[in-house]
Image (cartoon, rainbow, N blue to C red; front, top):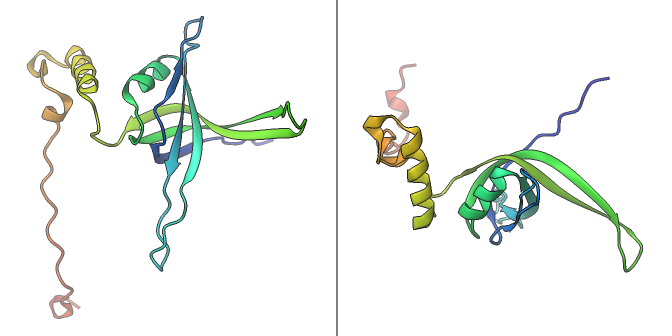
Length: 160
């Protein structure tokens, strides 16, 4: 029998500030948030309704997410789909909800607060070489040059 693959990746914006709860055991901290994933416009320019997915993180990542994520932040997420089932207390009906158990996330925007920058800079300076100490990661990153402006297609210039 071949094993299945349960891997999910996506990019979206947080719909609200994350909810963090500290556990009584190490690595039992939990952070939950919801992400809105926007679709591509169709040929007529209509934008589809976003897809909303619930996310959950555990352990040290949960604490980091609770401190650095906020409503509106764009994130890249990798995780696994998790299905939860339960009986509705009021109706007795079986209920089901899907969520993503997050393995890794990355910030995709620069919508950081000053406290976020301070924590990132202190982490960077501890991990960096002495020559880079005190400089933020953004200062060490190579600068990208602007892309050349697009040209109109001039088929007379083609070599064939």
